[in-house]
Image 1 (cartoon, rainbow, N blue to C red):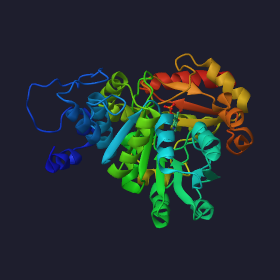
Image 2: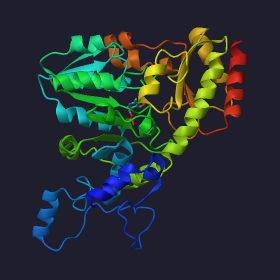
Image 3: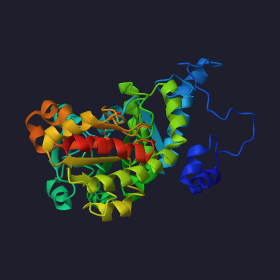
Length: 400
Ligand SMILES: Cc1ncc(COP(=O)(O)O)c(C=O)c1O
């Protein structure tokens, strides 16, 4: 593909990038849906050619090293993130842990946001620590804490924005400036935003990570992860991915590619409905506080409007009546099912404290990141907003 064609596709709007299958201008008789190449290996003409494919990192060598369907999907993810390159993984945690292990070694130090996804916290606090990689967890909404925690050994700053489940928004550009000054990596978990709402690389991150299981997959039927960034960093992560065998199956990759075509349409509708529901909940006396960055009352509203293009499809709220009221409310719902995860076409709701990742999984460190027992997290799907609001009203009548 010539550079000018790449420039052309980079100039397209988000929905055009998402919907188009081929970007190289050819008009050959090609299927408009990329074929699923299920073969794990490809016949070659000679041993010498096999060697060349291996050296060149071809995606027709052996599927753990690459696969044409997987490559097409990764390429689409890179295009949507505005990245030079992307890799896809068997889960979000696969992307996160592989990326961390690619850039960190014994003796290195990490400054990480304290209220990141509990299992990312656990990885840094257990496996990485056992490997000799120390992490200091800080409140990343306070930039001074990041600067104060950084040491000569610091190799990486790690943030997640908006954060799970309290929807805190971290200033990517400001943290990126700190990382650049110290010549360290900045990794950003952008799962809650998706590339439709936020592009951390353009704001100074060196790598953007996604649990693709959420908005990117979008149908609660596939587990995957994405890492996107510059080619040299991605080449290093690919080496480690091949060794860990943490690749995405071609069939699942095809499902992800199909989902990415509708990402913007889905997330826009999810944002619109989530904002309506956030406003509705904010007006109710049974709710003590709504966390949604697009609400005018959010402490993150200004920053969110600077670095995002919408508030996202997830909101959380604290019940005035605490944990008991949260359970009465959720159990009274008829339309919205209780389930974990987020970003799918169907709305789902959970009480994060029920999973109690913070205390069960994180031990003593968990008390630092424990969530309010009355906090409820709602992932807004594609249903009609009125039906969702009626269901929430039903739940609120139960606690009124
Ligand atoms: C913000 C965030 N990052 C990472 C993950 C891990 O993703 P996966 O379950 O696909 O491994 C999750 C899962 O909920 C998440 O919410």
